[in-house]
Length: 305
Image 1 (spheres, rainbow, N blue to C red):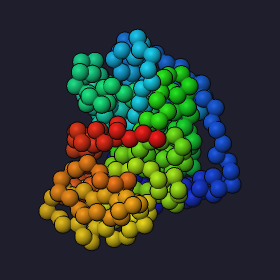
Image 2: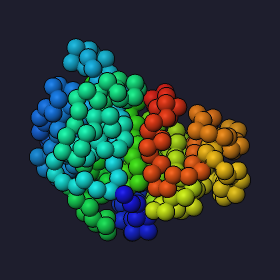
Image 3: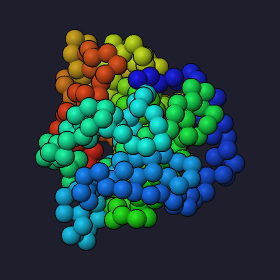
Image 4: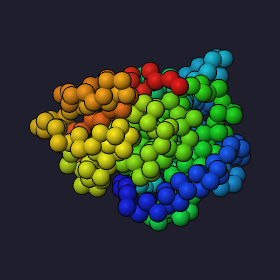
C-alpha cells in the first residue's frame, strides 16, 4: 500500500486551479444499483455510470428506526482494484471483523465491530483500477468522484448531515485529505493514517477537526513529508518533530485559541482542533493500531459540524 505524494502534485494542483475558477458546484446524486450481501445490513453497490463501487454497512435496527445515522467513509490503501466491491475491502479498517479472506466475509463479525462503528453507517469504496499518474478520476480517490458516492448515500439513506466522517490509510489517507479539502462543507472530522496532504491548505481544513497518525519509521510515506508537513500546513507550526521525545508513541495537539500543546505520551484524546500521533515504531502499517484504539473512535464520533 503506497501513497505517491510527488506524483499527486500535478493532478492536485490542477484540481486546485479548477476549484479556484468555480467549477466545484453541487454534484447530482449518481445512479447506483445495490444487492444484499448479508441480509439488509451489508450491501454491494455498483455505479451505473462512472464512479466507485462500494460496500454499504447499515447499523442494526436501521430499517425499523426513523432517526438519522452518522456516516463513516473508509478509503482503503493501494490494492484490491475492480468494478465490484470484494471482501478485500474489509481486510483492514473499521469493517475488518467481517473479513475472512479475499473471497469470503463472516456475518458474525458484525458482533465484533467497534461499538461506534457498529452503530454507524459505513461506506467502503473500491477503485476500479489504479492510475499512478492521477489523470483518470476513476483511477484514484478523486474527491468529486467520491462525492458522487457520498451524495447518493445521503440522498437515499437517513444520514446525519452534521456527522459525516472520512478516514483512510496510505493511498486512502491521501484520499481522505483530498475529499476534506475539496468538500469541507460535508465533513465533520477526518482521520488520515500513514499519509500526507498533497493539496494547498485552505480555510476549510484550517477549521476542521483532524487527527493524523503515522509511524516514525514508515518507509513508504516518510513522516517528514507526510504527517509532519501536513500538520505544519494546517496549523502554521513548522518542525514540530524537533521536539518529539522519541522512544515511544506520542501525541501533540494544536488549537487556534491556545496554540501548540506539548507532546503527550501514548495515543491520547486530542486536546485541540488538529492532532498528530507519531508512533515510535510500526513501519507503514499505522492503521492496525489506530483502528484498534477506542480513543480514536470515541473522539471521531463525538465531532459534529
